Amino acid sequence: MLLSALFPTRDIGRDPAKIRDWAQAAEDLGYDCIEVADHVFGAAPRGDWKPTYSEHDPFHETFTTMAFIAAVTKNIKLCSGVLILPQRQTGVVAKQAAEVDILSGGRLRLGVGVGWNHVEYEALGMDWKTRGARQAEQIEVMRRLWTEELVTFKGKFHTLIDVNMLPVPVQRPIPIWFGGSSDAVVKRAARIGDGWMPILSPEAAEPKLAALREHLKAFGRDPAKFGLEGWLRFDEADPQRWAAAAHGWQRLGAGIVMLYPMYRMPELDRQIETLRRFKEVAPK
Image 1 (cartoon, rainbow, N blue to C red):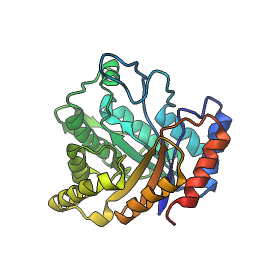
Image 2: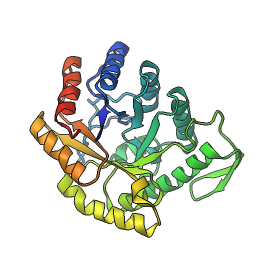
Image 3: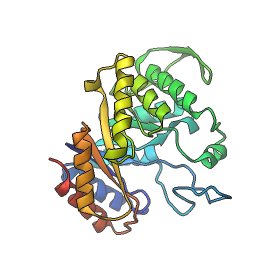
Image 4: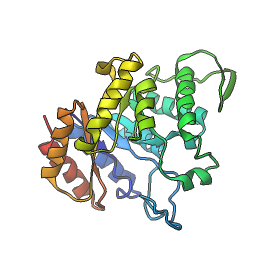
């Protein structure tokens, strides 16, 4: 079973040497992929709305961070985990992703989501209500920009007339995996995604996976070519529970698992030790 390492964006700090050391440690430990989370803005609570991450949580910029990690590693894959795609300009994301893929020698996997933070959408001048439909159209546009010499496209959210994107990425197209676990996301992932990467316990994931497989069948997709990664979110360090969750995802057919600590780890040594401990208890 492959393991992904969640970049400790809230705790790594601003020292580039620590980012380098952590990334190289993940690669040396045999992790398959480093996943970099995404938020442009932090947002303070208001009324009944309480954000998962607040104005006190730092998030390194996703594409810049992946490009830096590409330069200080050799083989480990890079993934956005997950990029909130509909709050961004599609062409800019396609360009950034292509550049990271080039600089990493074809190591990028683009993980995308629709997000939970309507305040962030508003602050970026994007429409919260149309995010699902916009995401689907964005993926079609990006794939065409990555694979075609000239693109003409007319949709609900995009108009492109004889435009292209150079240089092209190494992977044509770059693989796109979906985060999120709503019924709409599961169906969209089955229709146009290359994989699914939800934050769910194995027990909660089982009925969602049944629906996913039905959708894949309905859309004529080959389940053997569709990726599955389980994200293991924990509020405390408990290797026994990590192991149980990872083995549960393995039984469900996941090829990749990732530990997603919600607790804070400000020390670099502890961040690396957590990678080591998860590697020890995860399925081989």
